[in-house]
Length: 468
Image (cartoon, rainbow, N blue to C red; front, side):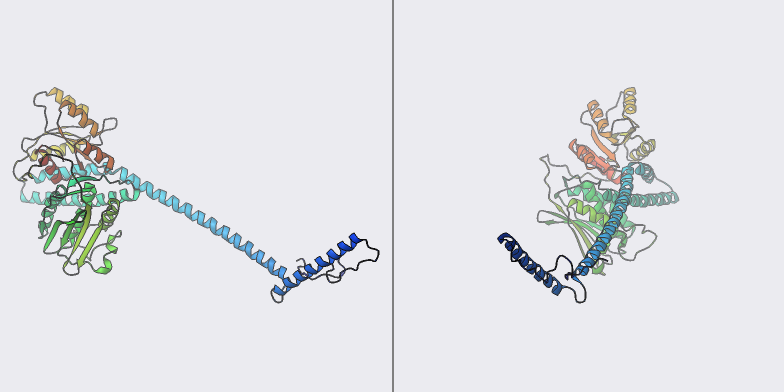
């Protein structure tokens, strides 16, 4: 190592300790330079003395400086290594996120194909339930129907969480009477509650709210499902309360309640309410996680109140809405009897199984049904049977065969043929733009897998002369 001492070495030209004497024969200019040289030597000596006095005891200050430089180099090398490791971690994380996003987008995109066979099966079992079957056959049909409902719930949950993770679920917010949503859910879950020996008490409201009907239905449906699942005796309450600027939709139960320590955890993925694990409890623990995400997308605050041993109350607050000016609505139509008898329905779906299932279901309700797998096939059938071709309702799938027009284009073409034809678009695509277009054109919209009760309510509502 080179010498780092700051002390002057004897014999070297720079000898700060012994300033040189001025010769007698020096010129004024030489004397001036020599005096300046002496002054600078004194300054340099003083500076070196100060450096020496400030150094580390027992070590030369330049050696300490060299050590500091070495440490700085080591820090730099380690920092670069750390930065490279972090960059590799970020790249790996980005790759994993891209793979996960690809998976979720794929699952969201293929939901139509996943729902088609399930939709057909539900239609067939619902049609069988309309028949007068022997008691053993009725029980078997009931078992099949419940199994399909379980598959629908699990698959629907998986598709929903995938849509939410993929960021492809956009809300279609529009005003609608809250009864349009809650009447259907009350009728559906009243039967489910009765099957478990529970009473569903529904308080109807005439309020108008602004939300995405399908997404809000998913929230309230999860509330009701959990209430029935975890309540062993007593009743379930479905109703509303007026709040400043909106409405709070409530679902209460007389179940075991939720301890305060668990009230945040149950909104996380794969968390389950209580300890129930019987054969009928096939959930994934994603219901309330989906509720929490949907509520965040819609900006609808959630509320949970519970008393262990007495029950729980889940609520979602929805802003008020205002419907466009329209004639007074007709009273809610009756549900019993043959209210749909004679209703003429056209069905267009590229899946022959769906067409056959719709025929069986609608015919059981007394409807006159004409089905086709494409617009061209329906028009050819109508041209071949010109007499009595008019229909009351068109049920059309949004996604038809490759190369064929979509359901909206089919509806527009058939409305040219028959102005004023009521239209209901059926789709497995939750894209907000599709729902918005159907609403703008005055069509109804139902999501797959199709719930027969919701279809029946839609058709009964159309009997009053308007599309929902």
